[in-house]
Length: 86
Image 1 (tube, rainbow, N blue to C red):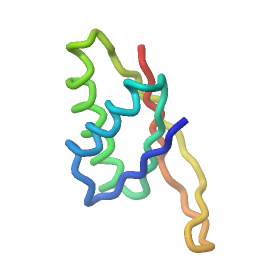
Image 2 (spheres, helix red, strand yellow):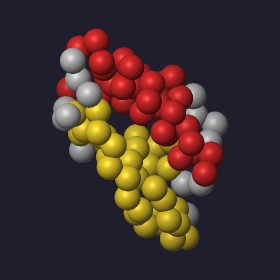
Image 3 (cartoon, rainbow, N blue to C red):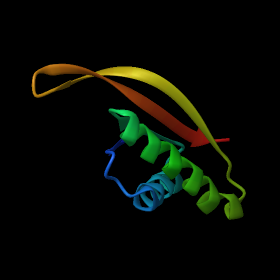
Image 4 (tube, helix red, strand yellow):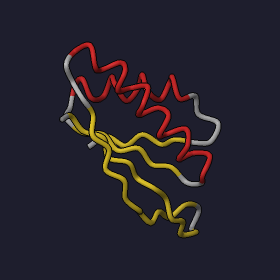
């Protein structure tokens, strides 16, 4: 499963395009976000990607979960958003 990392400065339109591109080739992708701003951008990207995929008859499902990541030796809690076809 491909992992896309989202930051609070990420463009939701660009993330949505990447998300739709990955989902055209595979059935699942994971977004990882640390912090409220990054989660906000990720959720907006999922909503935009649904609009990109809808004309093809593809609906998306989002499964949120927590994940612990080690960044520069420091353990951080992130949100992972698993997106798949319905």
